[in-house]
Length: 138
Image (tube, rainbow, N blue to C red):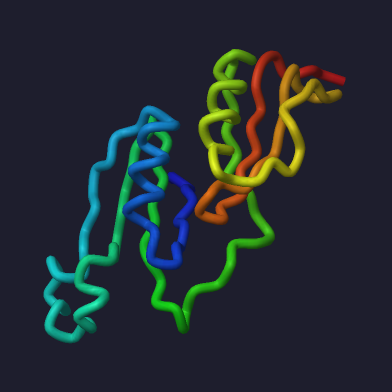
């Protein structure tokens, strides 16, 4: 079984996935536009280049997403995409890169459970939590 996030964007899916591929050093496996589907003739002209499905892999981890029409788009809330890395230095890099033009909710810092933890909302409105370094046991 594989459980992975599927993110919905307000017309920015392509830009978001290009950004995530750079930040996460991932590979974009699919970037399917509406114009390239069997329903292209039923899609408004201004949505032909919007993404109906994107898929990116980072090692065995999978992130998927698409653009949602304005009438169906909802601002992300009630979840965070969480990244766990072994090295604090890598957590710092990820936090810095993902927070570019975004909003830091909690700066990366030592916590009672990890050497470094931080929260941010990226420039596309997606909430992230970064855990790095040795996880502390109770």
